[in-house]
Length: 162
View 1 (tube, one colour):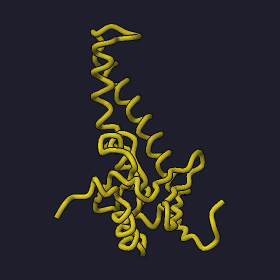
View 2: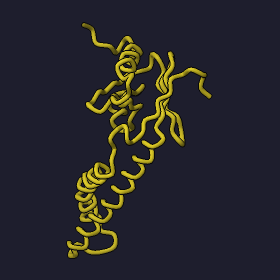
View 3: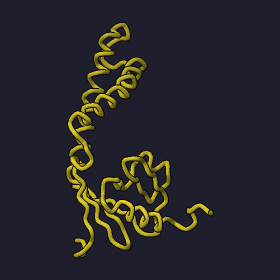
View 4: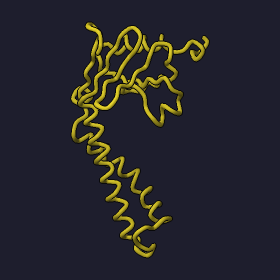
């Protein structure tokens, strides 16, 4: 599918220091954000009970949020286990089980750099915020070269004037 000699980077959870305690803390953060949301939805749109049972609503919100947080964390760790990035002169492709995500030369619109890596997308900033993009982790040995390559691919009309 890809040409011989195309650099392939396999990113493992261990390389990203994605340990089980960090996954647990991540799940707790997600649950802490989702529980109030579930509670408010249950408060304004009660489905199976009346509003007089606040203790049940709190318990239900916490349990639903914890379950969803566990599923999200498990799914994220599973995706990291098979995260591969293929780089050539014309495109960068992230290979996943269901679909491939590709960013081609000249179509880069959004580059967001964080302390853990760089998020690249051919969509605008809002679309990238909601749907994500191609993530290049900083732990790669060739991160600097990939950053320069992707920056040079940005659409000329979108590059800032110096």
